[in-house]
Length: 376
Image (cartoon, rainbow, N blue to C red; front, side, top):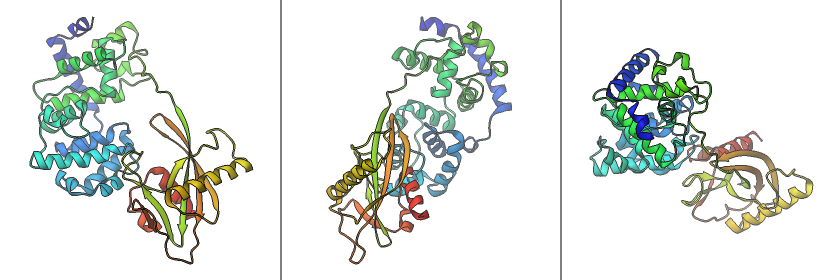
């Protein structure tokens, strides 16, 4: 059946589709900073940032990151902490760590020059099939199929593919179709046009079919199924968590801990953070509940750092999401006795001032907590 869908797009039809799409793109393309360059390094940075992040949110991060690390050599030479601090706020911090690791590989193996081959690109940390195709086509203008969220939706509708596009059969079909659409020249221009059409015309809800330059090729439109194609993604089961965090203060300094490689936000600095078991995600903080979680937090502080505070005070609560987890974070402040030298702590903990924290990478929740502490 999938072969029959592909047969609808013979070479002549593909040429007509490409021609209509390229004319539309020449008139309607948004001006985005990464479209003004053919530097594969800058294109790579933008593509990694755009994963699971909106275009509008990415632009200031993209410009700031390239200001800080203008070349692949600069990125390879940077400390991980410096890269994470520049990545702070984008989330999915493994992407930032992989950028640095891949930059080092490019310098070690490829002499600081980006490879143009798909196999060489995919061998680099954090570069998958789509990103490799984007770098090859946008940075080198060489043919390379691409399938990401916007083009996946567009391809499904053009083909009239109503089954699960994320299944093995669906993926194979879409990548084969993307390959079939590739031109011999100006591959980067075509791939940008495909992505742009998916982003601003062939949208998830309410696609603007009356403004679509390739609507005459669209099997979903022809059958009136564009609102139901592609099949929706199965949402993961949400897990509710409750966690506590303590800002321990001694004089003008705060105690922070660097998160380890097996934790969320690995390599970043944060106030002490731990699971809370004495309250649920929806339970109200009654007087007794507060006493219970303050006791649990104090126990965690002693076990993690061997420290005790004079009294724990609740400062704020933050509700946030990390992948499939919905987290209720209860934030406490506690003060050590100040008439003695700073308490000794383990090597992955550090006493720092608020000013020093500005140069350390922190999760967004840590920054929010710090901002509230400084207000108080």
